[in-house]
Length: 120
Image 1 (cartoon, one colour):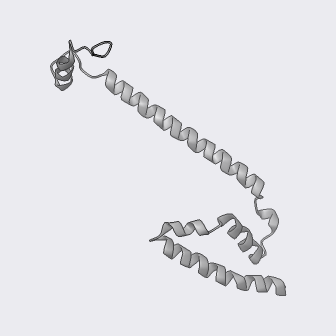
Image 2: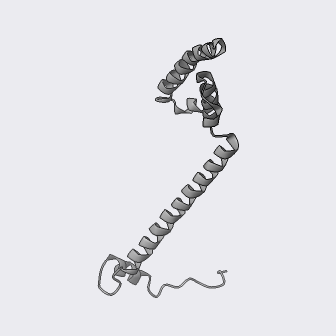
Image 3: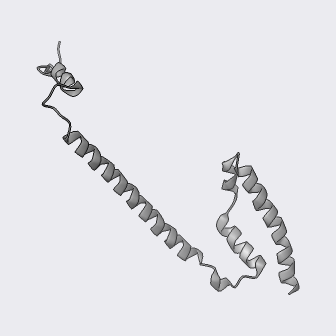
């Protein structure tokens, strides 16, 4: 009981540190790089006397994060593919038959050829 009470006293310092870090992070977000959030969670839980069975182990956390990163990457790829498909669809619907800015531009380059073999 005494040891747990002493650990609980240490929480005040941790709380002050985290609070101050949060305030500094509002104008200097890089300061958050100094916080090892995983270690903080373990130490804080221990100081509060939280049953270790409630804490997810580092190996399992790594797997969870790996799966999350994979899902985020797949979602980004899907968004990119959808954007590309939408652009292709829009391009396919451009009017190239009637006079407009695009047909004017295309007509400027009609008959234009690139010289072969360099020049000399």
